[in-house]
Every structure is written in structure tokens, then in C-alpha cells.
Length: 91
Image (spheres, rainbow, N blue to C red):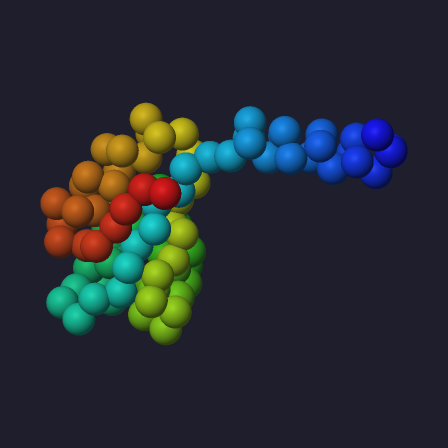
């Protein structure tokens, strides 16, 4: 095994161990910008500018990763977004 192969194998292992889940929010034709911004602030601990930027990405790109972390932390946050009528999932 070459040094390059060893390094690549080490990187792949670290990626698997450190991979965290993420909440993805999807664009829809129902929710207003203000509602999505307010919910990102309330549920994902975004500051107003971050929430607005994510909302713009959701609108123009169709989706945005709004929060990364452990599944147990993300589950109740995603549930609150879904309860608020926002299309979201944990990946």
C-alpha cells in the first residue's frame, strides 16, 4: 500500500465518523419569506441575516441546508418546522 493510498483511506474513515445529519428545507408556494425567516430564527437558532440568506437560497435554489448536527438535536427542530407547515427533512 502506498503512502497516498494510506492517506486516502484515513480521510475516508474520518469522513464516515464525522458525518453529521442536516436539516434541509425545501421551497414551496405556500409559506411567506417572513414566516420561513421567523421559523429559522426560532427553531434553528439563526440570526436574522442568516435566516434571510437561507430563505433566499431556498427560494432560488429550491432547497437549503439550514442546520447541521446530531440526529437527536435535529429531530425536534425539524418537527417544529414541519408543524409550522414548512417542508423539511433530515438527511
